[in-house]
Image 1 (spheres, rainbow, N blue to C red):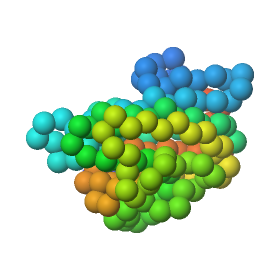
Image 2 (cartoon, rainbow, N blue to C red; image 1 turned 30 degrees about the horizontal axis):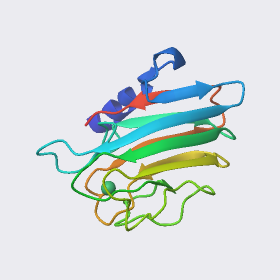
Image 3 (cartoon, helix red, strand yellow; image 1 turned 180 degrees about the vertical axis):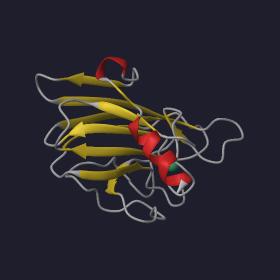
Length: 165
Ligand SMILES: [Cu+2]
């Protein structure tokens, strides 16, 4: 019960568009959101992080039908990484699979791109729902290398929801 209340409270903390993190750029006129994503692994951290986020600590909320583009870079000098958008299910996958939206993936989803590797892609949020934006290299998403994406038909703009943990 307490967990449920805490989860409700956490999901209610939504920041408005004018206080988006600086890695999110919104062009309302073209209904496009650009995500500048950097993977790094802090010393001693159990997994790599995406812009310092991990285990869904941040969820990006995007209206349905908008265009998302990401400019992704692997700044972890120790391991390959990748990125793919997948529908949220009960359990995180051991490795990345088919993207939920056409082109919503980096190159080499399971092998990953080497340190210094970059990937740019563009996709349209065709279906409402909750998604993982996760690293597809085996074991990485389960280790915490993922953030959330919510495609919300009721949303009028882009926002972020922060979650505890
Ligand atoms: Cu990874």
